Amino acid sequence: MTIIKPITHTMALKSKNIKINSNEAANTNSQTILNEINWLKSIIEKRVKDLKPEAGKNPEADQTYRFEEGLPDLDKNNSSYYAQLVCELELNAAERLLLILSLTAHIAPDVFSIHLRDDRSAYKPRFAEMGGYIDTVFFNFVPSLKTALYLIAANDLDNTLKLELFFTTQSKLVNEQIITFNNHVRGEECTLQYSIISLAPEYINYFVSGKKPRPDFGKNFPASLLTTGLNWEDLVVPEFTLKELQRLSKWHSHGLNLIQKTNGKLNGSFTCLFYGASGSGKTLAVQLLGKSLGVDVFRIDLSMVVSKYIGETEKNLAYLFDRAKNKNWILFFDEADALFGKRTEIKDSKDKWANLEMSYLLQRMEEHNGLTVLATNFRNNLDVALSRRFQSVIYFAKPDKAQRIELWKRLMPKPYSYESGIDFEQLGHYELTGGNITNIIKAACLDANHANTEVVASADIVEAIKREFAKENRILTQ
Image (cartoon, rainbow, N blue to C red; front, side, top):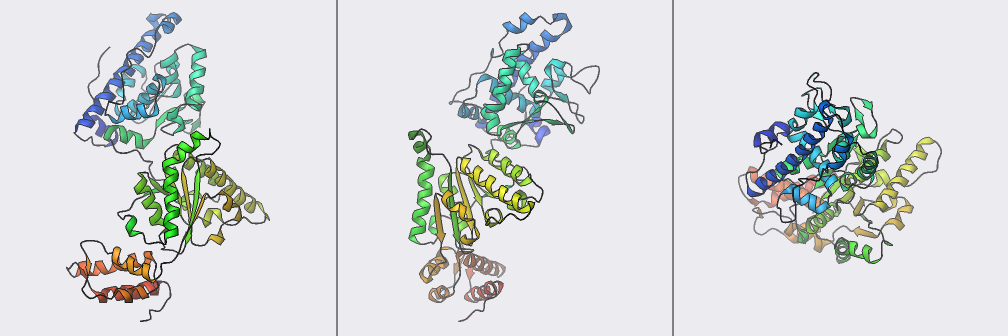
């Protein structure tokens, strides 16, 4: 077997324009992937050798060879990104081959093309038994599910069928959307075995650069990552609201143990409702939950989920929840009225499908093993059937005068400060939410920055308050 050269920075950049950090972890990761590719290469060379005419296609040769031969040892002591994922998911040898097969197609396509592209025609694979396709841009061999099945089981039909069933229904790689099978090739629908093996883009990036895998925002995943630089002390809310938020932290810490103790009689979903006036802290609260628990928070873009075409909304929701399955993400539906509005009396087909969409969403929420947060300004706008489905309903009240004074003091970011003698009692008199105060402080800091100072003038604060009142058609009274 010819050993391929280590994965170089040039190879990575050529495939995806991704830079590799030149540190020890990246070097360990590169060597780990190299070992896996060499293992894959040895399997390809063996199967190709048996398929060549001079081999006489001896079926006994296929039975004696075991693809696990030469499988690199990976354990939790291996610090590479690749090994950590393999150990975390407890992948077996067949899944490891499927994973490295999908990654090699991106970072080292020549491994396939040398052996599996027909020398007589650049447009067709060399062996029909291996499946796969030749892409029409770079003329590289693209592996399909049939490629993986043949590399593992060759002509063993019984094992091939069992593997196909395992990959499509039980493999963690597929269930967690790390690998998908694209059954549309060049615009034509194909059978499952001829489906292209696709590795999620965020995992290509993760294996090459070590960047934490997160889905790319777009039509296929209509959600954006929420982060914040604030801390819990910056969230000024009543004591009862804080206690309810602490219950959500308890679920995240002990929910899995509770499910195991009850033998699954309690499911893993936890759905809660945040309601209250705009700017009262609902979004900040869910951001802080994610930050303190160390999990990602994704705000769902409802404009990309809801579709006027029948069945499209359910399709978008299905893909969204499939991507979130077993990821421990917090899903945040802001302004949830758009999807969870009161169900209407069925007068035409539009009403029927709108009600079906909400029913489907409620079903998927109950199946989602994680925290789902819905936020609305007005609880009464939501369908009454939702009430029993919430494990927690948290009210975010408008801040009172004492809380407003605290917000004015806490939300001023360093290195900026108020000018001496500012009247916080007077500022607390104005009926504003935390969102309003944040906008005002931001505008006043901008004025201070323009004046080349880090001291915020009272006059700038007052002018910003006037503008904030004007946005809501309110008149500022002294």
